[in-house]
Amino acid sequence: MSTDTRPNSPSTQAPAQTWTQRLANPTQFMKLSDWLLPILSVIAAAVIGYGTYLTFFVAPPDYQQGETVKIMFIHVPSAWLGMMGYGLIAMSSFGLLVFRHPLADVSAKAAAPIGAAFTLLALVTGSLWGKPMWGTYWVWDARLTSVLILFFLYLGLMALRSSIDDEAMAAKQAAVLGLVGVVILPIIKFSVDWWNTLHQPASVVKLDGPAIHSSILIPLLVNAIGFSLLFFALHMKGMRNEILRRRVKALRLAEVERASHGREAATAAG
Image (cartoon, rainbow, N blue to C red; front, side, top):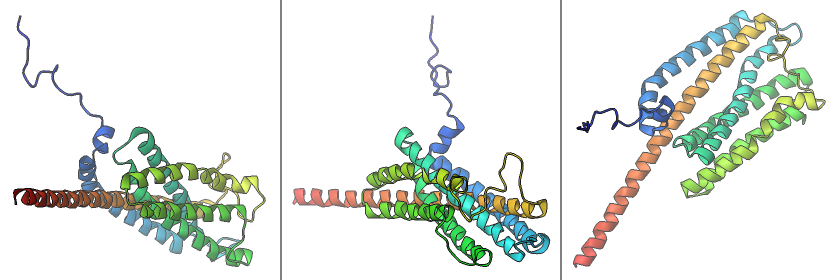
């Protein structure tokens, strides 16, 4: 009895990769992001534009805060994304240390400056809101202090990477710091419940429903969606840039190695 040994025989075909396995390949990620990034960027711009329209032409002044309430349409999404960015870094760090995911460190590195920018924006807009509401730009209460620590964690991650020449070692050290620092996220979230602070408690995500009127809530959510899409677009662009940077570096190292071998061969022949 003969055995089918054709290359296309089901018994000799490699198992099909899942979409997550395909996405883990940098080349496949570059192909996917090449057409997805422009679409995501356009949608983000459209949603942010609509959110800006709602902010300045539809949302009414608050009965207590007046026009100052509109600062919250930037402040709140920025604060959410500052926390989400660090959560993404922590998940990517876990993927690097545990699963050795090829794109985990790329994701963590790309997310750090974006998360830092949104956290800084949250701090600045919060201070601008605090002056007319609290009479001061800054108070050392639990929420504001913990968000400031989050900003310093972002700076620490970026500084740690830049201080280590060995990229593999820098990635591991940054991943460890990213996982350790994630403890700040529940502190930020529950600081208004654990301590007596000037900062208002949660008013959007609540078990009994939002405590904000729909005329304010809808523009806030639209801006949050727009900012989130912007975050993902910037993150995808940052990952693409990092992959390209590593490819260029690898090509340069290969060129240097070839030149070195050429010199050694010439010296041996001489």
